[in-house]
Image (cartoon, rainbow, N blue to C red; front, side, top):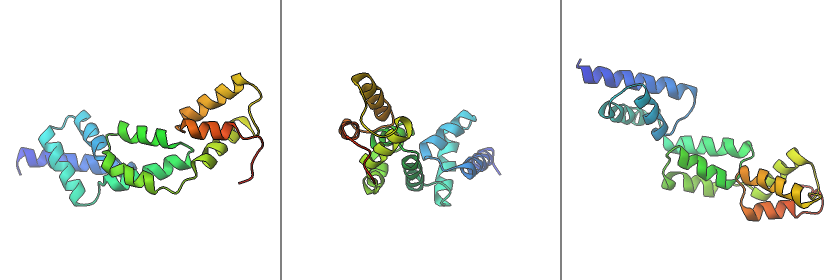
Length: 156
């Protein structure tokens, strides 16, 4: 066995250990293997083997990640930012994001209620505070205005 093939095998093993903990995007795994000191060519071969064995899948990562982040109460802007931060290509995550059957208004309303309780904000300062919170969670301005403009606690 040559030194390069041994390095590839070691990189594959390291990748499998990382993937055993949680799904990773291929760009995340590439970065982690680089941090462990593997050469670019070795990483490229290791990632190809992991993809061939179906251990590594960007589509599976995106599906699991987006579903999990929705369950955590994050909005569409935050989900897109998270995908971009992880180096996932727009062509991979956009179809999954569009296919999510999420009522963003209801999700934003739920996050607002959990944090601040039901009803409209009593004043401008509180309205701005709640708006910043929802915007930070990744909801659009339209979603924030809709939720904060509601008079009463609407039943879902």
